[in-house]
Length: 170
Image (cartoon, rainbow, N blue to C red):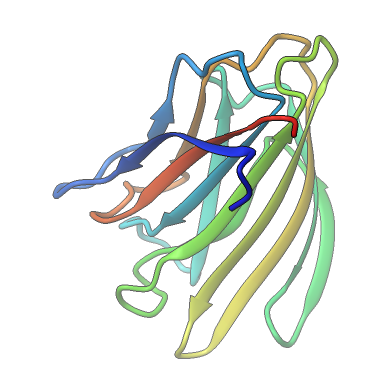
């Protein structure tokens, strides 16, 4: 990564899983934030992939997203709330396969609403994969001081990781 990227913290899920991966007390010394997630859930349900929510300052409120996704045979787009991605692997997808998801938040210290870009990919070697690009908006003027990701159903499994990067101007 470029010298302007600085790892703030990493969360790695241990045995027994975790309901969320959270970063608190984000320092106010960067211009942008990048959250990289490699994760899988132990949730149950009738789909190959499930939702993963982004919590900003402890909540999923005030968020909206416009997404474009494709699975190799179908492409679709829609708008929705809150800020989330549908690209989290869980038990109905190929065993031991983890999703790769990035949340990019420019100007997180701004007193304006905050944009969020999401780039997500999930694998399922048996039948399909899923790619999703999203443009999100957190309609709040507060500085972002904490971020968390939360699976819609179940917990993150052991070895799921999330790393938060701060990005500085050159």
